[in-house]
Structure formats: C-alpha cells, structure tokens
Length: 259
Image (tube, rainbow, N blue to C red; front, side, top):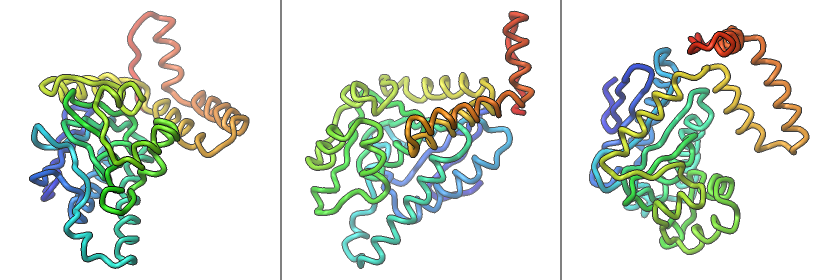
C-alpha cells in the first residue's frame, strides 16, 4: 500500500498504522482520505486481527485539523468536512477488529477525537490531550461532543470542551480517557505487546464483545441485557467456544480459528 501520509505495516497478526504529516500530523482532508483507505485495508486484511495507530515523531500524535484551510471555508464546506471526518472515524470505531491508539505526544482536537474512536488508548507520559476548538470560536466536528462525555462523563467533558484546556496523560489515566501511560521510549513496544496479547484471543468472541458494548450504549439497561443474552447464544454456535472450553478442561492453550 502506497499512501502519502499513512504507513501500513503488518507484524504477524498486528497492523501498525503511522500518521506522518509534518510538522504536527494535522488531519487535513488528504490525511483523512489516507486514514480511510488504511482503515478499509485493515478490515480486509485477513491476517491482521488488531490495529495499533500512532503518529510519527516524538512530540505529537495528531494536533488537530488544518486550521489555515478552515479560515476560508463556507458553512456548507465546514459541514461537509465534519461529515467526512466523522465517516472515517465511524469506520474506525465500528470495525469488527480491535483497535489500539498509541498517543506518542499531543492529541488535540481531531487528534483526540481520532483516539477516542479506538477501542483502547495508551499514552506517552509527556502527552497532553484536549479539545481546544472553543479557543478558535468553533466546536469539535469529528465527534468530540459525543464521544468525550461517553468516556469521561458529562462534567469532566464539559470542563474540557468549555475551557479548551488540555489535560496531562496522568489526568487522562485517572479520568479513564486512557488505559495506560508509559515512558515515551516504551510506548510503542507496550502497545504492540498488548496488541499481540489480545490478538491471541477468540476473534468471534472479541467481535461480539465490541458489538455488545458499543450497540448497548444506545439501549436501556434491560434492552442491553437482552441483547447480551442474544450474543451469548450466538457465540455458543462457534467452533472457538468448543475449543476454548475443551482447552480449559484439558489444561492447555486454546487454538482459536475465528469461527
């Protein structure tokens, strides 16, 4: 795959995607298009079970969108930009495979919105995260007002959105915005190790867990519980269920086939 702003590399069952758009990996329309192509390739890559998404360089993961380009946009063009960005991030969020974001530095605006569309988020200890759009007189357009409160709660999200102030990696960890924080030099190795670990788990069960969690967010608790029961029955139709249970009884490692 030959993309201008995103590299796609597979390491056994793990796909490593790196955004490279100096100086700050801004999410221009061209970068968004490359990401969309890379996400589609990941979905279609039969050998890749987990994705790790990171940024090139040591200081920035993704620092927002292309602000200079926004200066001349009409309202209709701005809405189109938001729709296109949301479409790509939605593709990332609903992919049936696991996604891990390794924030190697600043994750601001569209950068944080991109990270929040991943299943798991890891951060370098020096990273900062924020939605500073209000400082420009605008609002988030790639899902910030929707995903952030779902992850950290309404009160914390409103403070971040209305102040525009970034938070540290440690604060993000305390708020549940990231799963782990590591020294910068360890971040990618830790992300790849986590990806390798979860790639060994039952693929169908992993997909159904994601389906239960994300689709359950739009249901009442009782509806969600009924949905979980349906998925529980569905997973009992799989060969992986038989393999997992027999491996447990036989005290051996399971060999899941994804069916």
